[in-house]
Image (cartoon, rainbow, N blue to C red; front, side, top):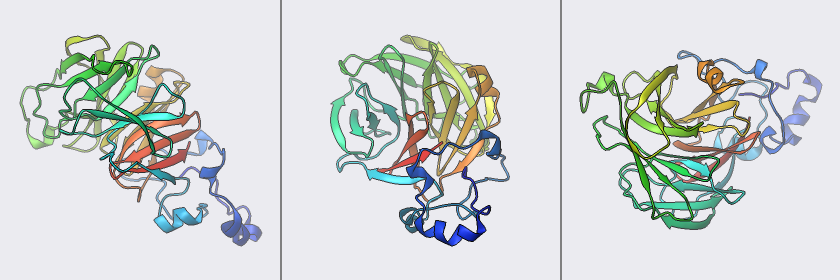
Length: 310
């Protein structure tokens, strides 16, 4: 993980292991220069690395250092397939996927339900949610497990009037078969975000499991052919995307892991080498949103809520 080893304090090691708080409970910020690079062969940050500090709860759950369970989604919220900050400070929107009711729940940072509303569009396979600075939200109805859907869309709405939904329909420029052969099934999108007038789509590679394709569509209603922007080497299946408040850090969540891309501009971020963090033991991690500039909130399909300091 991203924490400074305790080996420099050998005489105090025993004391620190019994009395120190997990760094997830503090305000610790890691030095980016000390953080390992991700490769398809090695995943730095696996649990149990010598010198990592864990609190008793994390050890009991066998979680990586820093990852801390902070709550559970309220009963009745069937799952969390994505996460996005709500207009009300300290609360977040989450939702289910793949044919569930078109319900969006608002929860606090521990997963407790605050409110809910029904979106005026069917839930074919909702997978991600993002927002723009003007208060518009963009629901990614673009889950596509078998790469055979031809009704992909981004649903644009405002929480105050959820029955009024406009659609950004799209298709992929490089898909001609529905479905393509199994090795070419890289048209499932479970991660999207708004940036600078565009909705960015990050694919979940179900073929080679190493390439995340990045497409864009305009944020205005209409029918479009998505534009392929770049391909990222991601040794995992991307399930959500979120951008830090300062716009300099992109987090791509995957199953029990995440990847961080840093840069001083959006173009630099998309050219950065992803850094890997293990979330092994957390469950099926599906939703991610920045709680603040230094803390990531993560939800799982099983309903667990975690915090991770970055």
